[in-house]
Image (cartoon, rainbow, N blue to C red):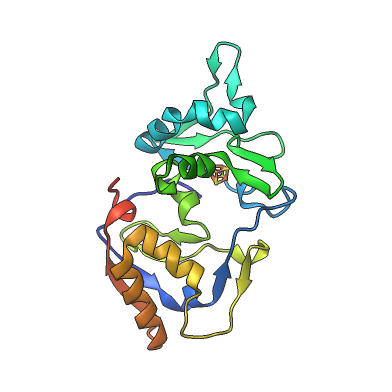
Length: 204
Ligand code: SF4
């Protein structure tokens, strides 16, 4: 899950999207847990949003707090893009364990604040297991290797995208785009081009 740049419209790989369902049920261990698998990079704007909620995130991840304030958990890997630190076992520093398994403190904080998760949580994490390839071939598809995670299941109902994935698309692209994509998939269309609004277009 790397940096995200935002095109104005995007191809949607309907065939790939209809081939998988996704439901996060919380991982019991770091084996095949998305939060322990990828290097997550954020833009400067995403980093500032995360820094703004560090005190709340630290309620779930006390390790974020150092002796003299909050530790810097970002490393600039490319101009304007910052990788989030992980623990030695690869688990993201914003992951925490609770009865429901491994959860994201930033997601929990967003829910507590009553804001959409992408306003606080890294965009790449909000999108996963969907992935947006970067321009000039921008396309919304399924992340390579997604089926090795137990929260993702192969679907054989061709021409129909799972309700969870349609919901995720609606959150990111808006309800009209989600409906357009669902209709196109039902008609057996393999790819569709969709105008971007909201977070996928880089808007807050
Ligand atoms: S930011 Fe949250 S969702 Fe993303 S890897 Fe870290 S814990 Fe997981």
